[in-house]
Length: 302
Image (tube, rainbow, N blue to C red; front, side, top):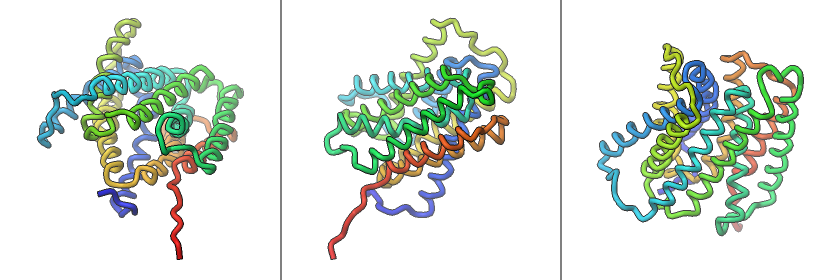
């Protein structure tokens, strides 16, 4: 049964997840000190795949069977691969704070894609306003990469790569909502994404001649463990659980907190500079996310 109102557990869990998702880009930066980008992303997906399969076995859920939506699952897995291919490469060229802002333009890709490809999900006036506000924030964030103060930590190319990752993330969500995969269990949907991306990213890492694991010190190992267990396994499963128990639009409206936490953590942990342009861009993107995902208002008669 889908609940219309959040209880205390849901609110606390949503805030913790937004903090976790915001912290992830910072953690990836530490991992890049000892593991090349695609190798790191592939190992993360591989480890989370085995954890998820163990979880499914524990819950008595069949792992391997013909579900009639396999090719859709593979397509979603390929799109999921694209997200992390560009995100992790982008993080080698730009700051964690910039990466968080650009990555969380994904809700706008979802809104636009749903408008064109999913019946009954046309854009409302408030969503169009949110898209316009967020676009102005993205322009400001790009301009911030051109300033002398930010140029040491960021680059337009890095920002563009992360933005491409956001587009792939949004496309993953749209295809999932429009395909037979939407009828699968949350764990099975996630399994397709993790398993396909693990294989694809590790193969790409080898084909591109990445250096792989160069320095597996405590910090790098902790980074990989965080990404695998807390982010790709626990975090994604908890998010799917929320979506299956509460209204999706209300859950999604909380994602405006993620870029706020992401920039805050990048400043506190990595000592990344925060410019006036970036603060303005952050506010505009966060406001846009909220407006795009704001639940439809219900008018009651009498």
